[in-house]
Image 1 (cartoon, rainbow, N blue to C red):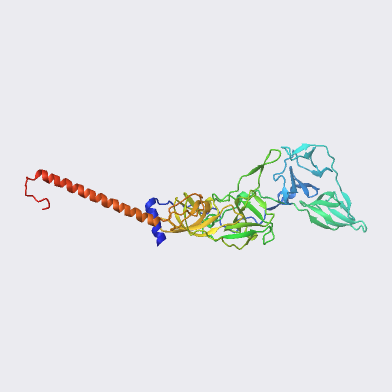
Image 2 (cartoon, rainbow, N blue to C red):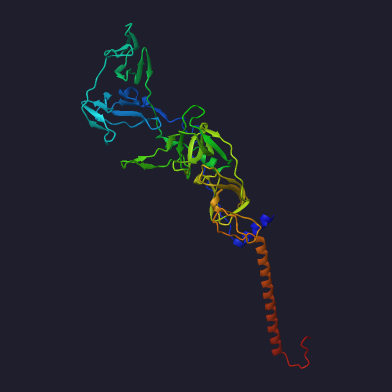
Amino acid sequence: MKFKAVTMALAFVLAAAPQYAFAAQAAQGDDSSEIYPTDFIEDLADTLGSTLSDYALNGQTSAFAGDTSLYVISPDDNGDMQLERKNGVTAPQAITMLDYGEDGTLYFYAPPSVYRYAPETKSGYAPADYEFETNTEIDVNGYRYVLNSTSGGLMAYNIQQPDPQYLFEDGCSQLKEYNGEAYIINDGAVYMLDGLTTAKVPTTYIDTSTDDKIRTGNAAEALAGDYTVRPVTVRTRTTDGHNTFITKIDLDEIGQYFTVPDETKILPDGEEQKVPSTQRLMNDSNALAIAEVGNATIIVMPDENGLSQSYITLTTATEQTSYSPPANDMSHAYALTDISIYSRPYICGATRIADVATGTLFTVEEKFSLSYLDDVFYRVTYTAEDGREITGYVAAGLLSAYTFEGEGEKENTTGQDDFEYGDNVEKVIIVLLIILLALVAVGYVIFYLTRKGEGSVRRRKNAPSDENDDLYS
């Protein structure tokens, strides 16, 4: 009752009612369970199909030609296979042959000319002189492989016992040897030959270019709804055995698709390079799970600069961890300025649920702090004008502790260190009321006496003179 009385008193003195603006938006897009890709793996074979005309291998790097396009797949710094030119390099004519020179330079033949693959040039190729070899027969690892140029069939002979066996009946081309291994194209795929067995050469790569088409589903409702603090560990592999990918997202607005930041970095040569929003997680990381959407979880964790950033990842990559809140250092607080209340301990448009005015009083439920996030929060409750109790999170720097005892003592504040606030409000208001009543009483007496005196004078001036008049009769 005491807290309620003080709240009413402060409301009377300040004569200011807080305004509330709720920002939760209706969900857009579908609420399918498949929000986030299970993986970002694509297969170049699906793109090339029957247009595959030649290939070339150089260590872990592979080059493939399809019609007038050239594709190069090579590992990045993390060992993940990346497609250097997703849209290919347009040659003047259809490419018929590829090969790597001894120095690792890639050459291709687009009749009638030979070109050198030069990614640094705008066209992606430059004229060159190079002689290509064509093989119809090679000996590798005790086997002789013979390509029938008429039918396109491939026969294998054991050199020790030359009984021919067909590995492929037809449809073969480009018999080659790289690093002591034999390779062949058959039916739109490259095969490595090992004795009498064959194995497809992988043509998969990571393609994160579609990360701006990740549907939001019911993210708006999920982020504005009730919340229980849930720290998690994000593992490098999901429980399904996939690599874990995380995608940086901007939660200031929720549309049909999650918004990914458009970031670039400057390379040593001065060129700008787009920073990918999706990357493979290389190490287990601590994070705060703030919502689940379909098969995905929205998390908050430090970015490359150590600042809190929102990401989305597969829920199967997250593992809940224990959490013990720190000791709560205040039971009530007031807003140092006009502030917003958030449904989660993360500041963004999607979690903003209310705005309140300076001086708004809160009951502080608990303190929230995690070492890997850049803000400390308090979970607070207050009563809105319409009588609803609203609970949310406020950044610690925007609140100051509030007590009802210790007149004249300095506050223990999370805001400005030298800020003081009259803490014995109830006594101050009583004193003010007494002074006000006293002033009213004095004013009334003076007014009464003044009126009375003026009436007596008028009566004496108008009344007939009577020496026997009794002054008090």
